[in-house]
Image (cartoon, rainbow, N blue to C red; front, side):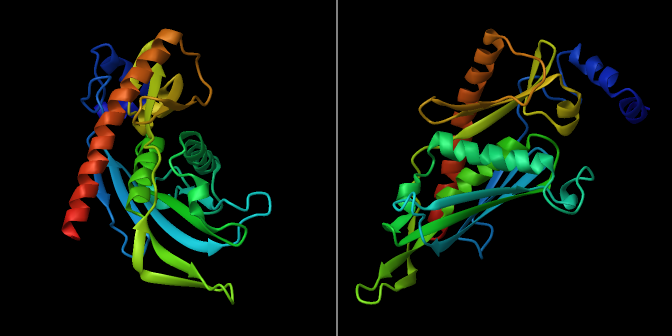
Length: 277
């Protein structure tokens, strides 16, 4: 009966829970779903992480390659992020070229990398004007139940912290590079951005929305903070406007969420390091 009502009148179904200050999955309005993290789960990648936020699951694999820097930026390498939403993660997506949502998510991740300064592209330069690293960050959603952006950023940050670059030397006479895969060093992480997403139902704010809540909401918002409580970016893809008071409330919740996620990443990363010691 309830399932039929939810399908026939989804907004009325949700409003019934909202009147009781709760949500259909039993959470309070400001309660996040359980978040779990596994680091280094892809043995063939240079760095990887798998994240679950409730039923939403995303995995990030990092691959690095040698390349020539551009003439315009001879002292910089490249970071190339991509978010994939395959049909296996949800019936909402179809095979073929990346859809609008996947493209928007990829652009969001690229913007966060740039605005937060999580990695400086100068650090990826091996020899100015001659050789640099390209860091490919491939994020794939395995199960989609809303809040893809938060899962993507957590997976990205954890995978970058797990990435190891092989030692590269350049022959002075031939200028040919030699890669030593036995000696590796980690990427230098300058900032630790964490995103926190919200959806609005008029004046009510929900954190960590499910797919049903995203579809029904009057507006969505994603706030990205770093460990210094600095605001890296605010992403609001249309919808109803937000008051300054409500925006400040979201920023405050994003600060608290950052501390939780940063602690989780460090804890899991230390466990992985200890296991390989």
